[in-house]
Amino acid sequence: MDDGHKITRRDMLGRSLLLGAVATVGTNLFLSACGGSAALDCSATAGLSAEDIATRTGNQYADASTDPAKKCSGCNFFTGAAAACGSCTVVKGTINPGGSCRLWVAKQA
Ligand code: SF4
Image 1 (cartoon, rainbow, N blue to C red):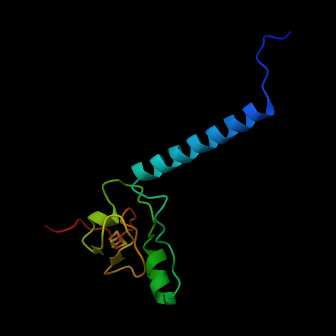
Image 2 (cartoon, rainbow, N blue to C red):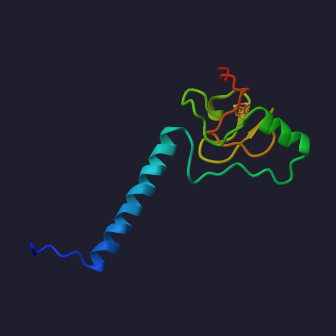
């Protein structure tokens, strides 16, 4: 039975591209809501000593905070801008303003 709705290869390709774009936007919105940034990767540890890396991993530093109320940008130890990798006076290496670790302390006024 032909209802007049044939799906061509071109239709399928167009729909696949649209679904991919929707999935990418959705992932980016989810990461933003979680305090992380898909475009900002501050996880590189090149150049850090083994001790610095151990401090980073031992305190469970993550590039995206799981708690919107506890992001590095709101931590007393964070220095830097809100839209670029910053630094921390305790955890060495580049720090994502949307990240966090176990040492988070509210920024002092
Ligand atoms: S102490 Fe932890 S939460 Fe605070 S800025 Fe440094 S890495 Fe982020």
